[in-house]
Length: 202
Figure 1 (cartoon, rainbow, N blue to C red):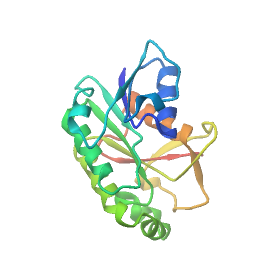
Figure 2 (tube, rainbow, N blue to C red; figure 1 turned 180 degrees about the vertical axis):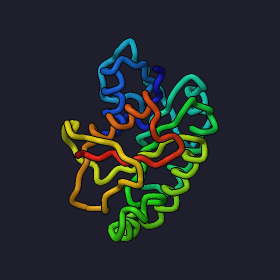
Figure 3 (tube, one colour; figure 1 turned 90 degrees about the horizontal axis):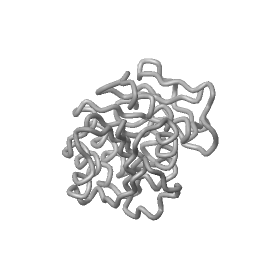
Figure 4 (cartoon, rainbow, N blue to C red; figure 1 turned 120 degrees about the horizontal axis):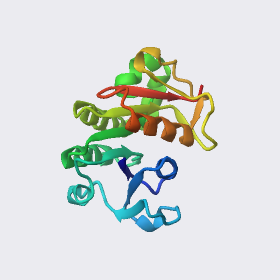
């Protein structure tokens, strides 16, 4: 498949790109500074510059033949929504978006812990929710991950829908490698189009 990874220089973006190449896909990796995409050159890897606040730079590399996987994360309100709008407007085949468990559509399922997360996110929360909703409205899949951690892909990992979501637990970690694998599974075989999916370590 032709995959495009947004925010490919971050830890989750690197995991997505590395695993996609390992699975035999062709990857266009987008970052504001492509030199920071810390992966060796490969015939199936193209590193390109792009900034979600410049929608034209996203449209220049996203088309109807590709599936976009986003690892975009930021401390700046407005960036996630700008990214979601730029990606959707570019018209990819599908979008697989990374969000946070306990926000937006998963808040009710997450329980009391969602309130704590809302306080931590502050004015970034509406941006996250609007970005998620933009992707969902376009038929994309939004992965609501718990607290991200380093470490290998979990051998017992699974992906569930909101109806099977556990209560939010700040102590429950899921590795970026596990989340990346779940997102790539969805890119290859869509199971949760237009819905929120939860990548769980076990």
